[in-house]
Image (cartoon, rainbow, N blue to C red; front, side, top):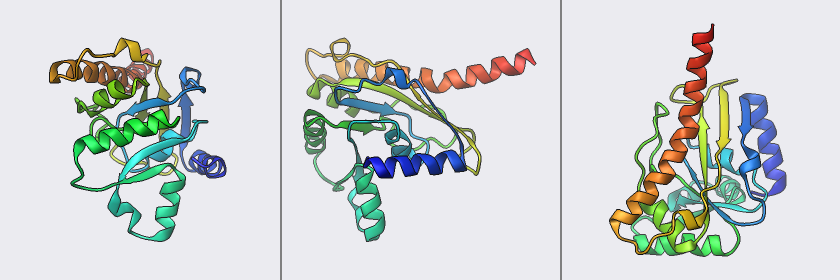
Length: 208
């Protein structure tokens, strides 16, 4: 994200929401990462890019760049790049690997669709294939807020987990079985970040 846009956006979010960022000490600042996150809202890519220092990119459907020039400019500044619907899956994977090898972070939402209630889904193996082919470490991310949508002064938490080193999720081949195991490891890490907030909330209720 453009530095100026990043700082302005963070200021706006802190004004409109009760916004907290946790676990920034877990973010390496010297190498590109696969940023694997749960998916809660259309604003997720914006939320995820704010604390990052290296350039961050994420895939967005081509139609979003055709709505209007101002919107296209904004999401481009936030690191979005267009993906054409119907393009071959391997081309998308290869583009993602090229982005990582160019020194940029890549945001991926393995669930593929937004969760309305905050429940973390099983995810898809594309994130495992990108991680395996790029050799990049994976940074689990959790976006947490109550309800289906964000409202003024909603409590919004962005939480970063510990990096999963590439060597821990390396595969001998890209068979469905091996990719599923890697995907499960990544999704479990995301789920721990998200559900940790729920557990803490329950503990506070019990203490009171």
